[in-house]
Amino acid sequence: MLRDLRHPTPRAVIPFFLFPDLVMNTFLRRGFATFVLLMGAMGLAHAQRAVVPLMDFKDIPVSAATAKALTAEQVRQAFQVSAAATKWDVTPLADGTLQLSTLRNGKHAVVLAVTLSADKYSAVYVRSADMKFTESLNTRPPSGPMGWQAVPAGEDGAKKQAERFANLPESKFAVRRDNAFIHPFYETWVHELLGGVRRQLALQ
Image 1 (cartoon, rainbow, N blue to C red):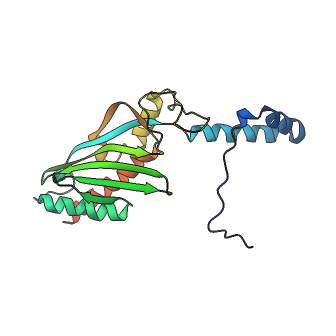
Image 2: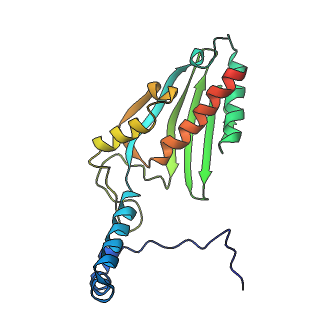
Image 3: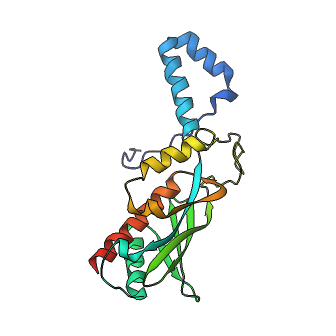
């Protein structure tokens, strides 16, 4: 059977620290260079499990996107258009707020609560699945033998994350939630959503 190269089979990450004989045999049989590459792969796999402080985005003024006076309905439409473009589903709630949810790769899920008016809007974390959300550092996830650690010790990770998004207007309204940490992709996806909202408001 021919293999579909467009959809390669994902490779499992091997927890090398559980197999010391594999590490030693690699060093003896294939030399120092291969050993260094193996250790680097182990470090990369660990870094990918790093968490960063969770950010909510509160009271972003509509005036940051446009000088025009808009209605709450126009702000709502901006969210709907941006959500469709950035892989978020929108559910209007009875109290006038929006629930936004996204599912990535069939397993990584995030839910936001969005409040809005003619003057401002907020996007706040509600819950997630398989996003390494935790309320304490240096803990193990609900499943799997390998835990994660904040990068490094939390504060450096927060600084690097802030530097990454520093040029985006929405960063001014990011509020760090106390004792809450999550996978870095969370903030990336929220910034994509809010950036689309800003551009849609500017087009109104």
